Image 1 (cartoon, rainbow, N blue to C red):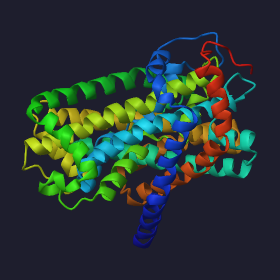
Image 2: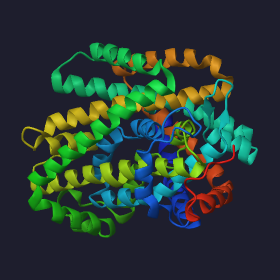
Image 3: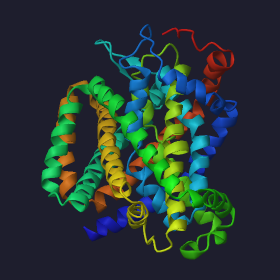
Image 4: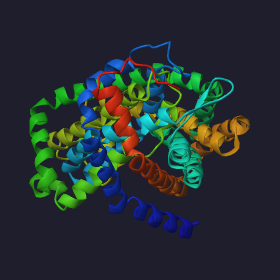
Length: 451
């Protein structure tokens, strides 16, 4: 087992090294320029996300699809992951994470547009879509589509399931002393009750849970920033300065380099918002939308909320807390997170506990849909119920076992998901540009697509 752990850790480190980071970030920048900066329409995207359009084709509302994607995207990485980036790369990592989110909006837009463009309507009226359909129907590379679906199905059981249930059990045990077995059983029952109803049930629950947990968490972070008010502006300046001159951070951050700050920040940003991973487009394909561009804009707003807002606020809380309380321990991300939030009277520790548990639970729900759709592509929808049973059982297993191997395997699967998806994005970028020009830049967002 130790040998397997070492092998997977090495493979994961290689896959998430500079080549993939450069490829992902390069795709973000390429699509930003190719599509004429769709980030300019982010407020239009936010408006569309809360608009209803019952006349359009699809299974769930645009907001329901966005909430489900955000449920899967906003996870423990938004809290502990950002702290890890700061602990290793210094405060400058927060700047690079934020910048990755800004450029990642274009990639999330493009992959979601392709998901709508190439989605397939089933006899029962439901829709299937995502990178596997773009690869098969758009590029004619079914073998790549099959690989993507396999990687997604495996990743859903790891990073989207067992890793998250383990985080919930660990936090509940550390905070309240509850036995992980009982926590595992409770979470398993709750997940089963939601996912057994399919995408409509998942989207309804996520539509209620995601806004509540995000607003509560961000409001709590704003309170912390008010407590740390004397250090907020210095923290902002330090984040920007340290992105290009890490030695300016001083203290325990000494030792970080520009490359380390950039690598940790970019990697955390990419991993957090999943732009380029190909996961969010799977649920975007189920949305009721008049044309591909409308839902693409809505999906792109998810990257804005996840990274440009939540990750940036978390990073500012962490850095300002370190400046305000010099005795904070930051040997690793988890320790830094607990230490920083515990310094805030009354609300600090409960806010962290609430954020970690709700973010992890919502991630489990969102990734169930991704994995189920991947299985449906591979072997037909008849196996969906079997997959749900396996997925629900995995929730309990994850809460009571050591997950080092699962975590590294999931990291590998996430990286491998990105590769075929990026091929689709680059290979079909002309299609994305044409649709964007037709509907977005020609001001035809209200037009219906001919399906």
